[in-house]
Amino acid sequence: MNTPPGATQTVQLPQPKYPILTRMLCRQCFHEHQAQGQKQVVTCPHCKGQLSIEQPAGKEEPVQWVVGEGHPLVPNTRVMRMFVEDGVVEVYSVSTDTKGTAGMRNLVPMDHVILVEEAMPFDVFVELLTEAEGLGAEPGEKAAPAENGQQNVS
Image 1 (cartoon, rainbow, N blue to C red):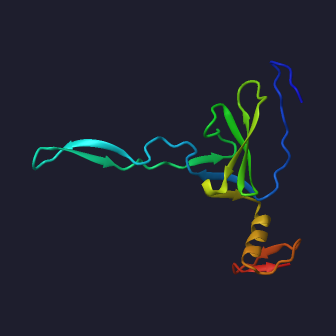
Image 2 (cartoon, one colour; image 1 turned 180 degrees about the vertical axis):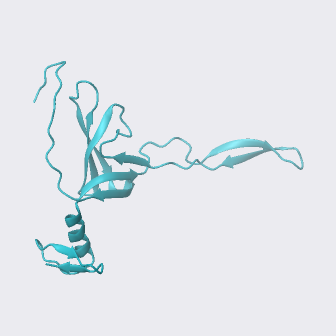
Image 3 (cartoon, rainbow, N blue to C red; image 1 turned 30 degrees about the vertical axis):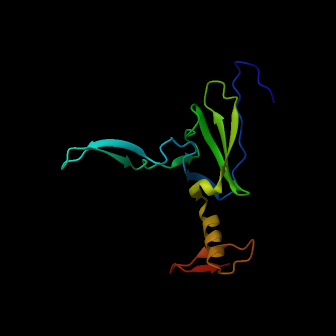
């Protein structure tokens, strides 16, 4: 769909399927050339001679991707949705400029991912928890928490 220049395009996204990926932390995509550290020349306190000491490389902070917030690598772009598919996290983003006409997709390999966070309604949470604990809820059955904190399948 082409939008004439200067026109604003509004796109209605479909309702998400739960659980929805809301946050991802991954390793830096672009590394500075400091992999082996830098050398620093210091004076020995005893002999007053010059010593070359290798400084360790700085600690790299992870990159954070959050749905609804700015894209961590591309200015004027907002992360809209993220999905884990076939060994990658697919990140869909749109431009936040006045035209709002550009969309993009990033593919982050799972071996770069440190953490993913998912959000969901409580009924989906209970269903997934029941499934993870092996309590035997059949597909389509809803599990409900009992008053004592145990899971009941109904």
